[in-house]
Length: 334
Image (cartoon, rainbow, N blue to C red; front, side, top):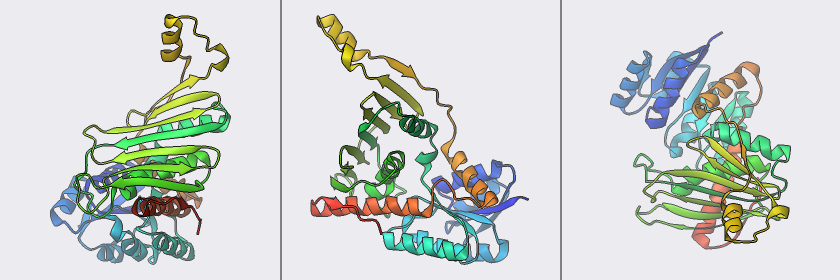
């Protein structure tokens, strides 16, 4: 039986959701919705589906099985609750909601309404991230000693309601928590607004995991788009490029690190043993939406649950508090 879906919000990301759904077998894109009449109608026309300017009318007329909510973060809770209370399975683009309290309300409503609640943390579906997590769990790196992330680039004008931590760093707060299997003990951060008024557009975040730490650099200032993660373990080192989905792995050779002359120094320093890691490139959004649909069909939990979304918001709130107060913030789960 075909799953009837709708997309709320037809901006840059919402239009991509509509495209992917329209191409998925066993899925019918019934309608799209946006308060911007021009954009909404254009997306509806391009995918031969219906357009609504009011999501409540869409619920009343279309009765979809599932919906992607791709609107500004400040509207996530309000729009999502209307669908959840109508018995519609919901995927909400990250972050789940502006506050932990809002996240808790959404999770509670989804549970009582017996609907699927998934959060669109798209990097979870990046094939390179999936491969890295697999290698970590297999013991290739030994004990993890550190993770360093750089997620920088120019400011996207469409983001008008949250800062760089809530919109951008949240990707890596989620990924790090997932691949390490838990939340940090504390976070400490610095940040500010270099070019954008009233909102932080850059930040440096330290996540304390007790015996080691993770560092995230994030900004909307750097003129080049960079999305990288490096991991150091007792047995090896990895460099991951989120954009190219490339993963390079280097084996540690502590016992063989003898440098008798300058040539040895250059060779050992610049050319350690490299292991080829095969990563099959794929579109993370397609994998994400396929997981959402499959979770509805199978009645199983999606790969990114409401609790996962809440934890990412919890960390974002802690980072923002640290930036504001200059203090180390202890992570306390609700």
